[in-house]
Amino acid sequence: MTHLVYIEASPMQAASTSIAVATAWLEAYRQAHPDDTVDTINVWDIDLPPFDADMIAAKFAVLRAQNATAPQQALWARAVAVSQRFNAADCYLFSLPMWNFGIPYRLKHFIDVVTLPGQNWRWSREAGYQALLPGKRATLVYSSAGAYPLRPDEDESDFQKPYMRRWLRFLDIAVTAEISASPTLVPPEALAATKAGAMERARALAAN
Image (tube, rainbow, N blue to C red; front, side):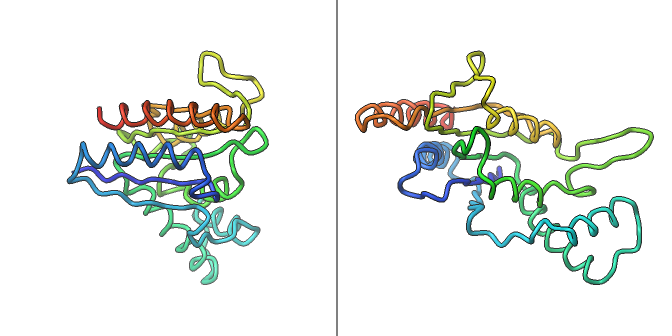
C-alpha cells in the first residue's frame, strides 16, 4: 500500500485551475489504486510555525548540536511534526499557481518549515549535504496566467518550475511527471480548452 501526500498551494479552491487539474489526477489515481492512502495538506489551512529569528535560532541550535532552550525545543517540535507528516509519503502530488514568476509565499513558508536537518537532510564536514528521502517521487501540477510551458520550451523568467525541481532534488525526491495548465488569463472558452487538456493528461498519468 502506497501513501500519497497531496500539497495544495492555491487559496482559490473551486476557482483554481491547478486544483481542478490535480483533482482530476487524484480521482483517476484513487480508481487505479483504491487501497492507497491520501493525505491532503492545504498550505493555507495548516498551522505553520513562523519561520522567524526564534525558529532560525532553534534550527541552528540543532544543526550545530548546541543545547537548545526549552522554548527552542518546543518550537522545533512543531516544525518536526509538520516535517514528519510530509516525510511519511511514498509519493507526492503538488498543485501550485505561479505568483510573480515564482511560487505562492505560503508554499515557500511550508517548504521552509518542512525542510529540516535530521529529518529529510543532513550535513557533515566529511560528506557535505546528504538527502534522506531516497526512492520517493512527485508529480507537479502548475498553472500560470501567462504562457509558461514546460521544458524544453521553458521561459527564462519562469522561477516556479525550476525552484520546485531544485528543492525536491535536494531531498532526493524524483520528479516523475509535470503538468502545466497555461495560460489561464484568456477568454473563457480558451481557458476551458486549456483546463480540459491538462485534466485529460492528468488522468492518463495517474491511471498509469
